[in-house]
Image 1 (cartoon, rainbow, N blue to C red):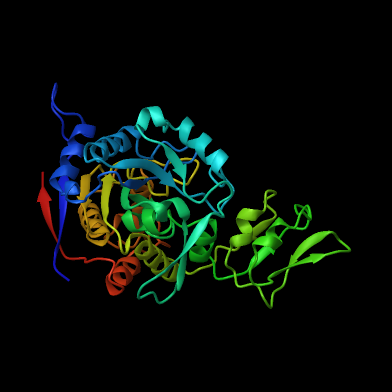
Image 2: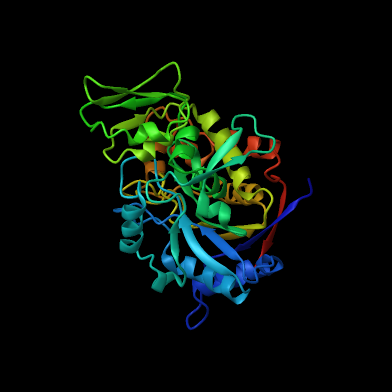
Length: 376
């Protein structure tokens, strides 16, 4: 595979000069976004609206900059994300939209509609074959994302407690998975039902295609058939009472590889473009209801047609950065017996690991790790 081009802009601005949203517009235009024919086409812009209580997510101003350029190119943009598998403020579309609004994402502020891609309860998904996949035969992707004719990812590049960092591949692969898709990536296990929370409504039973659920007539409760349950996760979104859960027990390496395969399912066979902002680099995901202090200084804005090259360029920049005092990373490095792994993300969260994700992404043809950095 030939070397990719990754375009880069720093975060410097001048008094009475361009602001950062304008710099972002210039960056994505220089990186070639205009090469994609968007005239009259639906353009899905995948971003993260932030969990309530978290302030590390990307501000809506950046999304608006991307939306404005898409409109200039004749596209019909919408901002999107999928519901979460865990209990929080984004595990159904009503709460998810309310969360987005509270965090500043409205049609007025971003200039386009906001659509939760996997529907009201996270069950509106499409089964997408993964070409060259080794762990996932068919990925469960939010329907609205797959209905888009052009796909753009807008990513906050930051740390992650399992995957090391959350970059473009994670934003696409994990973020575009429906609730069942996220469950498949996270879990090697089967469904579990809390009998105290189960109301016996049997909605989950209608979602199961494998006879993995049975209704106990005597107790008026659902139970799992361990011989039939395949751990697909479709029952998760059907339960309105949070009675169904899955152990998040997929090993980090397998999680990384499944995530890369999900990302390939999303972008294969259609035009895509990817943007990452390496700012407010918190040690944990924006799915947390809080954000810790940044572990390294802001690095800049990056864009590319290749999501793997983009992640590689962002991590390369971060590997050169010095830890910020007062951060989780800095505090860890002061502990007696600390072993320096020369990696800010693994030093901040020693149990995390990211290299296998990029290695597997290259193996399955998601992109290339070889790139040329073009400064704008």
